[in-house]
Length: 457
Image 1 (tube, rainbow, N blue to C red):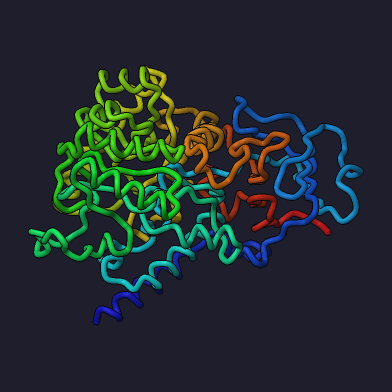
Image 2 (image 1 turned 180 degrees about the horizontal axis):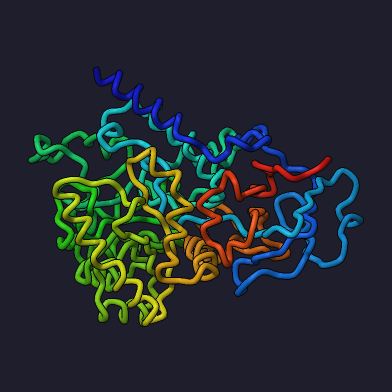
């Protein structure tokens, strides 16, 4: 029976409509094209920083870098054999970045993940990674889950997908947001075998500074580019109310010290002022969520230069479906979202954007639509800046652990060639990003073309 359930869920994930259906370029690393040079003619550029589009320009990509941007023709510079794409006045912009994505957990229900074969989990996640790229998201910051193998497969061209900055397992205290054990597993013997969540490296439990330090070092050993701790209660977790504060300052400091010794940083899941302030005093660099923050906490973040990685959590059709006690917790979070964004703007916080889609294969197709809802608080061009150059600045906090050296989130000479060619002007009509099948005419990552409906030989 269980095997049948897993097969059904895997099959359901595979048949979710995917954004690459109309693309003539096969969306996998082996068949994706990286010509010697690509000339994108007659495009209007949103460079990731400016307030709007440029006039008509020509952009030359060679290898995986943007070599030249010029109003003058560049056919001569491109050379023989270059691929020519006539943009026809369309918008060229940087690839989108999701700063709070769950590569392994977005497209499979939690109940299935806890019993599924690891192979099933990886196959579904690889399929979803391809869909993610074909929605125009060329980079993601993965904030918990066993994504290391998938990242390696994407980087090696075995499967298509975005650049992945993996955190590895979320580190949680006993009974915290990352404790996926069943009640019958408690009390745990001192030398008890890992629970299922720990066994698949989805979430690991650590109590006390020494244990936290050890778990951080383990994730860094496996390839984490940043570390995630659960600092407070969560909506999707079983045991902790939203108001619960998790971990002490000394435990946060142990995690931060271990991460900084590897040249990177700690981010935390937190909603409430108490949880956020304890983490900030412990030295964390990023707060993910923060919907229930108050003015004092926002001021503290501004003074310390702490980032807010925010999600547009509102009670709409894109909310992660929840029932029972989880729905009650979710409504608590929704109630604080407007104020959190207002406080972020009031105090000039560095704000990143992410979706945090979890455990729902039907919801992942809404990734771009969720970005578009952020215009409730920001203008379309501010939203695009956040999801390109702003999120790229956050990714750079990984320092020496950054797996993709180079400039991302911008269309500039010398930057990495992660590019989208858009039908229309998303700086004025952000809804264009909600329909990537129709509106993204070309998708390029690292100079490779994964979708192209315009070029000629």
